[in-house]
Amino acid sequence: LYYQDLMNITGQFDDICAAFSSGDFQRQLEIHEPMNPVLSENTLDAAYELEDYWKKFMLDLDKVMGPDKMPHLADAAKLIVDRNPELLQKTRNLLKALDEDIQQRTRETNIIIRASFAVALIIAIGIMLWFYRQVLRPLSGSAEGFRQASAGNFSYRMPVTANNEIGFLALSFNQLSSRLNSLFKLTARLQEGSDLNETLEFVSHTFPELLPLDWVGVLFVSTDGQIQLERAYSDGVPEELGILHFPLKDTLLEQCLNSGEPLHIPDIQEVAQLSSSYRFLQVLTDRQRRDAIFLPVTSQSPIPGVLVFATRQAHAYGQEHTQLLSNLATVITLSFSRTLKLAEHARLAAIGQFVSDIAHEIRTPLATVSMALDYFENTELPEAAHKRLLLAEQEMARINRLLADILLYARPLTLKTESTDLCLILEKAITSRKPPAEKHKAAIALDCPEDTLPLHADPDRLLQIFLNLLGNAIEATTANSAVTIRVRSKDTDKVIQVDVTNRGDPIAPENLEYLFEPFFTTKANGTGLGLAIVRRLVQAHGGSVAVTSDTESGTTFTVRIPRML
Figure 1 (cartoon, rainbow, N blue to C red):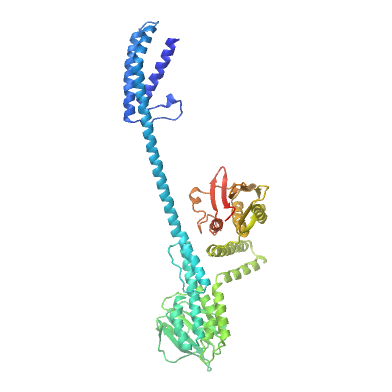
Figure 2: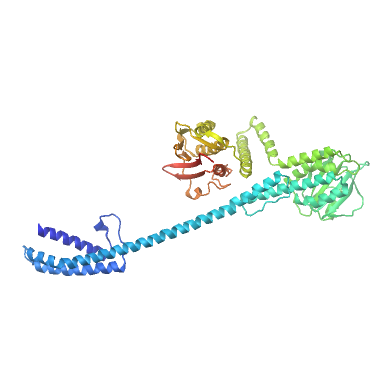
């Protein structure tokens, strides 16, 4: 038994020495993966020294035990006792070297961890600075622009700092405020009682901000059936043309007056050659004008006339310019009368109406198109036309959602806080989203504590938060699955947590960090502002919103809102 035990122990010691020699501890540690640690030189030196001593010890042990079948165990025991202190010392040297190696590795690991934390902190600060410069500061400038416009300061211009959606929003606002500023200047000029020459000069200087313009003139119909060019400005300077009379019959000027609508002539040189009666077009051609719009001024003017806008650039005017001038027709009619001044209230009413038209120039055409689509929806149409109608209705709804979301996102946010119960708000949200859930064959499960969850917040804003999240979850989840809403809170908690989970396809990891950024969307008909609005409303309550997504747990949006603001 002593011999067998001796053989087992020496065999284990051989294995340990072999592990240090080869650097592979997989078999000794009984693990399935390779274990090849990089040891320090001191550790390796101690291991090699122990191994050399062990080899000599084993040679001496073999000699003492002899080649006989019956080993000399007594002599072997005496050798072991004699050599044991030195063997033990070398073993302790190895253990001490290993311990020092481990402590050194621990110090290095701590340094790496601290360095990693410092790098992560720097990256986080960099992201926050980037987000502030690229999103928050431009949006703050946008909000300031809307505040200035609402106060009547239409000369304010937003800084366009980026070539993205926010920059496009700022550019669009600047265009709109520029138009409104020009209109108010025109209003002031009308109130001053300017005559024809002053008003035409004002148009030549101001209207290039609204549309391409380097020549403007006005023609009035005379009693003899002809039309006369009264005044003209070229590049903002009066142009001396003398008195020019043109027959009105069978001309584009007559067509414009009869229709009462702006008439666009995209290529003056080409059209002037179509008829010898187009003498006025030949005058414009001689002055190298290539594109023109005729604007009738007849509705309230005692003298019918035509205001002509022209430019040297061919095909410079688009539909938006024609529409703008169509809206301007009433204003120009008020100003282009040499013998009659309209009453002050009529002029102001016309200007005010035009300003209202400009302010709603986006939504008004959309409403008209929407009514037209509603009309055709009740009409029997071919299948292909019906599909196009449905697509047009979807795009109309998307544009309206985009306009509403942009206004909601850009306006300064105020909260009307009161004591409210979160569970009741969630039940309202579920009731509101029940029809689309049934259409999608998705169930909605609410896990809310039986006790009330009072918190001080704006109930309408909270409802909007969970309507958006629940609507997204219903759209994302698979058919015949459930969307779950779980509320977690204790009486001692200062924060209420709500998890909205769906079992649809997970969100791509590279998209997770952009979900709450404005105008980022993966949906074909999405506006990209829904989740940005959610985050803004949650943050206004002093809370936070986060998202996790994987194939096993699904996608979960977590909203944390403090009980008291």
